[in-house]
Amino acid sequence: MDLSVDNLEELIVTFYEKWYGTNSLWKKEFSPYSSSSMEYKGFILNISYGKGVRLKPPKFPYITFLKYGFKTSKGVYPYVAINTDKNLLETYLGVSHKYEPDVSHEKLEKIKEYSRKHKKYFKVSEIDDLIHALNKNIEVFEKIINSNEDKKKMLNIKNIILYGVPGVGKTHNIAKLITLIEEGKSEREIFDAIRRNDPYDREPLEDIQDRIEFVTFHQSFGYEDFIEGFRPNEEGKIELVDGIFKHLSLRAKENFIDSRKETQELEKESFLLEKIKRYIAYKIQSDEPIKLKKGSEFKLIQFDNSRLVFSASENSLTNKEFIIKISDFMKICQSDREKHTLKDIADILGTSSIQQKYSYYLALYKDFKDFDSSYNDKHKSKIESIEEKNYYLIIDEINRGNISKIFGELITLIEEDKRDTYEVTLPYSKERFSVPSNLYIIGTMNSTDKSIALIDIALRRRFTFLKMQPNDDLVPEFAKDLFNSLNENISERLGDEYQIGHSYFMNIENEEDLEFVLEYKIKPLLEEYFYGDKDGLLNVIELISQKR
Image 1 (cartoon, rainbow, N blue to C red):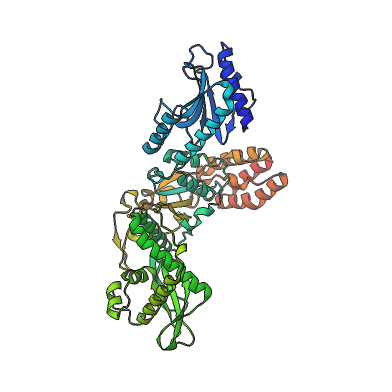
Image 2 (image 1 turned 90 degrees about the horizontal axis):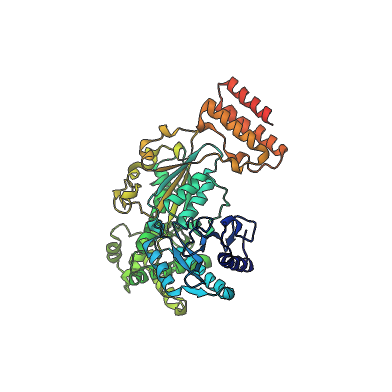
């Protein structure tokens, strides 16, 4: 039952009056409401006078407001208590004494400090003031618990595989897993929540979509797709292209490094990067050309955060497209010279192969400086420190790929204790590369496709496996008996790894829907399971007929 302010006031007054007006009081007889689970602003109320009958009264009868998996015996929480020494009600933020709560030392100290300064006492007639103070405590509690100061410290496991039979919600639960990681839940809370496979309204995760990449492994997927490799471009020419894993790792690493920089250092680099991005956005949107010498010009045509593509316009002597790394252009801008010779730029970029692009670099640099100097200073704001964020690579059907072929030498670098420190030289680009600790690799695996025992041993020992089980609580009541009998029969004949998941049955509303699912989804799956075992298939189909 969700309590309104009036409901809560009535409950607290009753809580106080029954303590002083009753010699024997059972907890279950206390509440003036019928619901056994009361909530207020998303907090579950736990009411206690001790152990049921008041044979030995506690010093402080209490109502705790619990959230985030905390218990009264192990947690932190707002609460209202009866101070029996003063015969008054009190409210503040409490900390369990029996067991140490699962919260960081910094947050625990903030809660204790707040309580020392803001513990307040009220007469029962001052219930309105008490509720106001309680609401303030709830607000402060939420702010402290949801702060990001130790979010990245709580989850040490970075590589996770959700596995199970078809239809148990492996892909669906990825959203829950990412949400719990983003909320800073502990490993125990996260793994317990995923293993329970409780009903979950999936959040769209729209605010972090730019930090999530999705890929499906298959037999022809390789190192060149995942890390880096040579690929033909639109002109049919071969060029070196970053794969999805390297691309996301570099983004995560950039955030990881920037989050540890001092504000002054950030101002130099991030201000410049923001100015460059602003300039590029304007030039692309306006389709405005950049002038070269002798009347020629070129245009910026594409930008993807790491590379800038520009093309000479029709009245130029060439129609070629050129690519420049933003990091290279930043180096030229950071040198902040009035003029750059060919040797200057070659020294700055550490390469002599720039002759073809030299005039473009100069024109681009001059045009950028002119644009930036004319930009209104009032739009420029002081940069704040950058928060470290998590990045997520989701690999569907991870067991279908050739792991050695896909990961190559990086299979060692993804281990949690080798993140940020161990480096390898990539074979194509010759770049030094490491995997950052703020990158999570989350895979899904259909256990009927390939047994856990047959998975590449290198993958098995570097990932934590979470098994998803069929959950009959998510199946409509009229189909539950059929669902359970079907899985029992399959388990006896083929083993647990060939059960059928609940998602096949979740959206059925009547017998007609059930008939459709059985005929067009379940039977084809059974035919695959019992391929070559006609008697076994007939027995299971007969069971379905009997249960319908």
